[in-house]
Image (cartoon, rainbow, N blue to C red; front, side, top):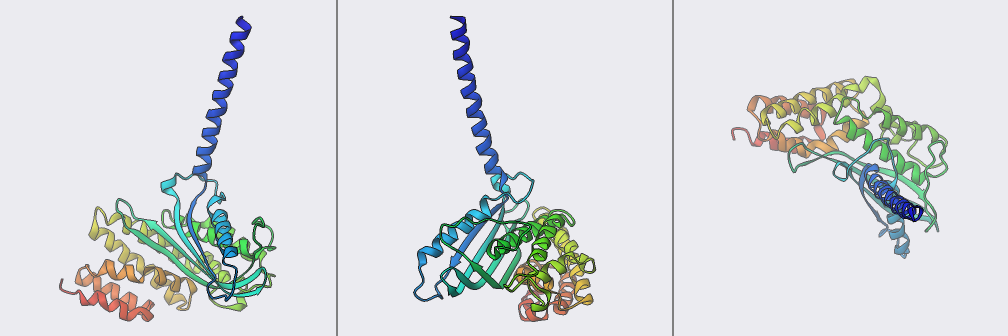
Length: 314
C-alpha cells in the first residue's frame, strides 16, 4: 500500500515538473527572440506573377527574422526591437529568382514617453535572391551560399548594432562585426551589394564606414543624440535638446573628414524631419547654431530646415 502511495505521488510530481518545464521553456522561448520585425513583400510590378508565392515568401521571411535567436541576450516582449522590412520585387528572372529593393527601418522608443524615434531608414536597391515556395530558409554564418538569408541576416545585425549604439557607447560593435563577417563571406558572390567597387553606398561601405575609427564620432552621436538627448527630454526638455544639438557636432566632424560618407546620408534620411520638430521650439541662439551645422553638413535638406527658422520668435 505504501509503495502504491509513493508511486502515485511520484507520478503526480513528475507530471508537475514536466508542466513547469514546458511552461518555462515556452516562456523563455518567447523572451529569447530580439526582433519585432514587420515584413512586407510586394511583387505587384511583376505582371502575371503568382501572388500566393509572395505571400508564402513574406510569411517565411517574417518567421526567419522574428523566430531566430540573434544574440545571447534575453528580451521581454516589450523590449523587442521594432523594425520594418519592405521588399519590392520588380523583376522575375526565372521561376525562383528575383530582383528588386529592400528598405529597412528601425525605430526606438523614447524614455518615459509614447514617442518613437526613427534610427535607421535604408533603401538597398541591390536586392537579388532565389526563393522556392515551402523550401526551408537557413542561414550559415560561414557561407555565402544563399544571398536571401545573407541579406536578411546582415540587416538583422545592422538593426541590432544601431539599436545597441543608442543605449551605450559603441554598444553595437559585436553585431557590426557579425554583419562585417557576412560581407567578407560574400566577397565572391555574383550578386551586387557586397563589393567596394560596385558603389560607394552599399552593404560593404555601410560596414566600412561604421567600423572605421576615423568616423568614430558618428557612433558617439548615435549615443548622445538618443540616450543623453531624446531620452532626457521627457523630464528636462531644454537640457535634452541642448544635448541633441551638441551631438550634431560629432556629425559635423565626420562631414569635415569626408563629406560623401554613406553613413551621413543614412543619418539625415532618418533624422531630418525629427530635427525640424525638435529645434522649431528652440531658443534663437541654439536654433542658429543648429541651422549653421545642418546647412553645412546636409545642404540637400536645406529647404526643409528653413522651417526651423520660420518659428523664430515663437
